[in-house]
Image (cartoon, rainbow, N blue to C red):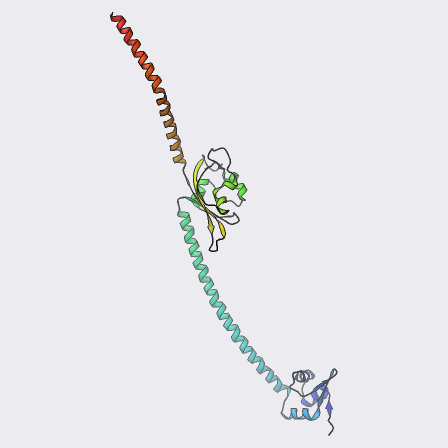
Length: 270
C-alpha cells in the first residue's frame, strides 16, 4: 500500500490549525511527522487518525492555557513562599538593627558619662569616638586629619613643655599599632585652652576574636592640679634644703657674734 504524504500547509488546512501550531506540534513530537531536509512531511493516514481524536486549535489552546495556569500557580506559590521568607528575614534584621542601635546608644551614653577623656580610633587611625570629657580636656573635638598632624592640631608636647610630641609616640597611635601603653604624660597647649594642661594617658589595642588588630582606645585625665602641687612641693623642699644648707654657716656667724659681744661686755666691766 502506497503512502500519501502531506505538506505542513495541507496538514494545517486539514486540522484547522495555524501553520505555526502544526510546526510546534511536529517539533514536540505530539503530531506524527518527519522532517526531510528543511521541510516537514506527514503521512495522511496518521494525520487522519490524529484528527479523529477531535484535536483543534481551541483544544490545544485549552491545553496550553492549563499548562500555563499550572506553571503560574507553582510560580505564584514559590513567589509567595519566598516573599514570606524574605519578610521574616527582614523582620529579624530590623529587630537586630534596633537592638544594635539600642546597644550603641547605651554604650555612647556610658562613654559620654565617663569622667575621663576617651578616644577610640579604628585600624586606619580614623577617630570614631571622642567623648565630651576628651573635648573639655583638649579644648576641641575629633579631627579627620592623619595622625602625623595630630601633634600640631591638638598641641601635644612632651613633659618638658617645649618639644612637640612625635606622632609615633602618641599613646593612641602606639595602641593602634598593637602596643599597650600603661602610663604616659603629655602637655596639651593650643589656642583653644586658656593655659597648658597636663594629662596622664593609658592606651590599649582593640583585638577581635581572631586576634586581629581593630584599632586602639586611649583614656586620659587632667593632672594639672597634681603637677602644680608637685611643683610647689618641689620649690618648698628646695627652699628648705637651701635653708638647711645655710644653717652651719649661720650657726658659726651667730657663735662669732656671741663671742664678740661677750668679749665687749667683759672688757667694759673690767
